[in-house]
Length: 287
Image (tube, rainbow, N blue to C red; front, top):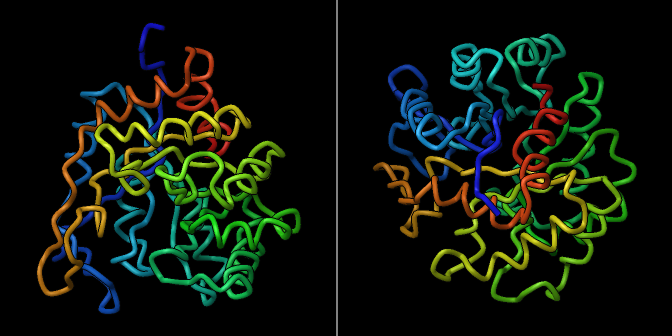
């Protein structure tokens, strides 16, 4: 197979940070990132052949989405966003986010250390009920055990659910690991999209070779429910160092061009690659 990036390819999971003098961080954050500008991100995307971008509001900003809104205004029609809100958000604020290009809301269970299924279920359902009238989805970062405990209630969600980073499957445990069947079933039923993003969060092998069977199993379950993202600029504990609030926690160094080629390899054909990189993002985010 010729590894060619299709026109209209979308990176569905990136973040933008700083400058802190304009966009101050939440005092309750778990780490302080260095700056990572939209200009740097656009230069990266230009170099690897990506033309569409989904910015996911990062946890150090809490529920202050000003940085996200400004970045989306700069990106125009080639940008979409996933916001973070709390239960006090007003309908007017949600409509302002929608006008800016936001098409989803993130419930970050993993970073918050929330693994209680009942609490997680309540968070997801309350978020879904607020954003369903806008046609948004709910995105969550969680692990397979928590997802499995929630799987039976997914049919009751009034929105689509998007699961970050392979659902935090452990690549070393392979495709028979506990919980993966529940994620595969939800994908096959069309209830869930999964982001094939940040394999370094699930694998320790060179080139993340043991993540390939997980990726291919997810793609085989339903290629129309797969998304791809770099997780640029690779923040937080992914850097392999202790998180710090008092000083910037360095980003992980990753080859994002190789990450895109890896996705093309997992796809196995130009047709599947186009679904993952172009058609699915266009459907979900409204490009």
